[in-house]
Image 1 (cartoon, rainbow, N blue to C red):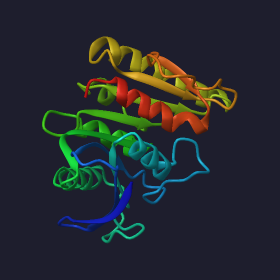
Image 2: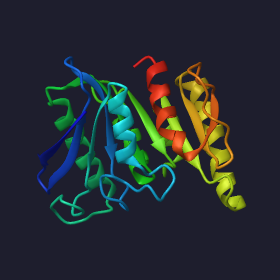
Image 3: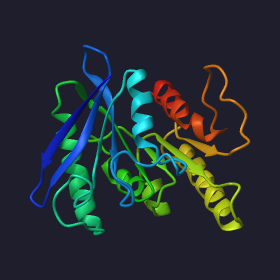
Length: 230
């Protein structure tokens, strides 16, 4: 595994990120992680489903490349911070185009992922010629936007030990993904994170709804990618 600093210029900013490549000669499939507006590119180990750097290491061990970057005006990226949807989407598209141009990356096998707001933006990049699937971590996204994605989705959700509002959020998204599975892609799945979850267990078919511990989220993502036709 190797980490490289990658700089991408846009009309409004210079986006700085980390390109992680596996130890493989052939171009590798890749995951593009979009920033959430709260954390810098590596995410946070203190928050469930936010350990982006950790997921990148696990992906590399499984033969996947990845790219994570600081949002405009945060971390090492230049420009003025913006919560504007159009600005976030423009930066995400620039990052996707930049990742496609990397020699160690299979441009036709890129999955886009994101935590909270980043997951919402990711839905808009899943289309022919762009990303082939999406990984949404505690996403902030409208129902109709998620249901319109015409490709496999993995939606990871945490907080079932929290107050009722959080449990309602999780159950709502599990129902949405079930609809997406029936309407758009039979390979769409949900992962619920719970402190008392049993071990992930040996390799096997990824069930439609899986519950894992926080430390098993990365392996679950890798398993889903391996078992999904991308």
